[in-house]
Length: 119
Image (tube, rainbow, N blue to C red; front, side, top):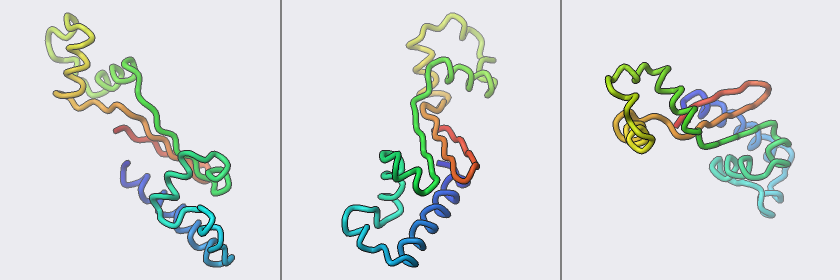
């Protein structure tokens, strides 16, 4: 995740933590609510109802080969001569090993603010 996403997640978790403290909801932690930021983030990723309660949506997905090819175009890496003759396996090898083209898209939405990053 990028710095902006990390800061946003810090803000959401701090809001969650303050609400737990201010409303004396510690008993919810005892029955399985997250007690750390990492647990909170994982619960938001896997539990839609919990995620909606806190206004946070975290989506992670694999990029398709076509999306990764689009990233190559944006990064101007197709300037290498002869790439048109490469097969899919060679292209994937270059994307993974030579060019470090991301394979995942992470989208975080909180209070109508959406931040996307590639990993």
